[in-house]
Length: 287
Image 1 (spheres, rainbow, N blue to C red):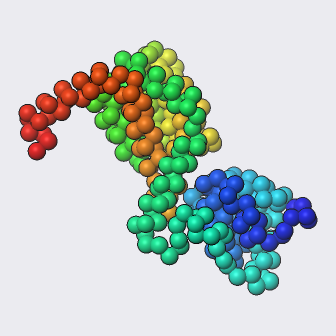
Image 2 (cartoon, helix red, strand yellow):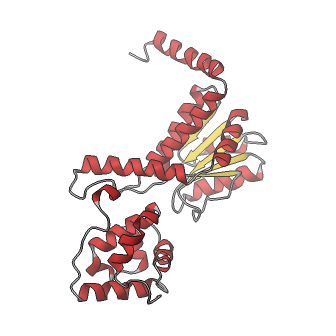
Image 3 (cartoon, one colour):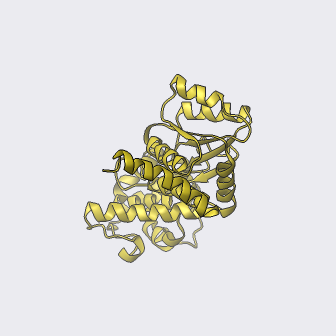
């Protein structure tokens, strides 16, 4: 580590906080709040605490000027040994929420940050390419298992309402495999998965690519097993303050895709939506 830089871990974290990514901020907050513990956690364990990967922890340590994670650990142990007291990494206005805030406020504010991170992770070019693929698709299949299932259902709902034939596959049963086998050039598979994506989702992507279909990937980071396996990859932040990942970013992303398709021909899509909602009202479905 460069001796010209301050060696206190808490100083490094506070000074660089504004430049950190969402995952790095989560790691930084955990370190400053648990300085005595971090000195004895493996990179993998610290990654779990920050809801990220061990490789992210190692790269973060190096970005702070350490040769690697073990050197950061040593510095943390030394700072704690010398009696450094835990203090906030940043002021409350920088965090976006107060540590003392209630769970409702803190969770929803964290979700708002997740939406901002989702915006920053995507380019307009990739987004527009995905929109054009969906707009021109004769049929769309959306695959998403476990926590990604709710995102797949949302995407299917929006596309069907716009008149684009779409089915959500939330498991690997034979009916969904049959739908996959019917995909061809011009059709679209939207594959949604986070961290270590489900093996069924990965197999659907590989099959769709082999059949010449367009594949839109929605995942959380470039190290995901799904990233760059398709025609275009979009990213959604999934960081959370509690035990489950947040899918707010992913749901917002598919909502943006629907909005972009709608904006291309509002009259056309308004007429399609009106037919569905008029029929629903007649049948009493909306009562």
